Length: 351
Ligand code: KDG
Image 1 (cartoon, rainbow, N blue to C red):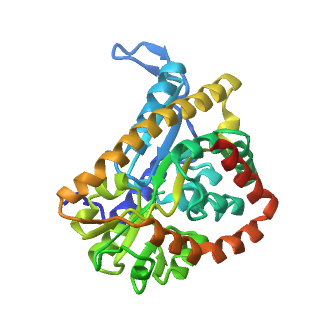
Image 2: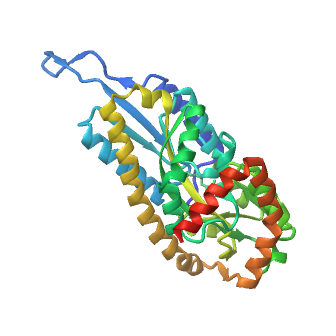
């Protein structure tokens, strides 16, 4: 069994860790004594608790480890980074709330839950928006992407870099999905985001929003028939144990946003702010590279583990695009056509 932690356990751990951490990020202040009883000057260190939903095998966690290495080395230990995986500190939404409260310092959620805090972020979850990861990199790492990160500040969050979750693909335990029609009647877990929900409804599925930390158990108990995530997640989270079919729907390119609590960021010196900002970008470049390799490799592993793989033809993909278009139009209007146009133009320029 790859998935050992129940939501109960995860919840209790989050409470425990929060209780141990408290809201003060400085630790070890004042003096201490060494073994000989001599008083020594102990350097104050600031602690970053960085939490994610995915497990320790995932490139997202390897990225966090890289961030830790860079920050601790460059601040010579003045900032200590503690890394937490598998939702040990909570799910995407609750960790963002903890950042706002200043009881956690870093998290790296998908853009979908971020839209509950800054609605404009929904645009990145428009189905079939980005044609490739490379185009996504150019848009997100450029002026347009920065403009979205800046919007987080009003929410007491500091967006430091885009990392990558990747192209999302559908899995389920009921039937091979080859056509737009095949979505009909499938109960699909979606991320907690209204656009995702409505898009799956438009495809004829029965979507239920749910935190990532509850997903494995929901599939195991049959509460949902399926879910959608990049191949790296499907493989590394052991979904082949509870899912039979996978299709290359590639319906949404999911970016991650590496973000920090504004309260914490503002408490850092200018030099420390530069170090954490640079480290988030460098660790992100490393994470994207690992993630792309993983997403290329793991489809074969899923098939080896017994899942059936179904390719979506261009004709069927076109039908899916048509089915979700009214939802995209609706959200484009809600977000503001100027914001959406800005993203479309950047995508065009990047191609
Ligand atoms: O660490 C990130 C995860 O918490 C989450 O964003 C993964 O894509 C995801 C999902 O489906 O919830």
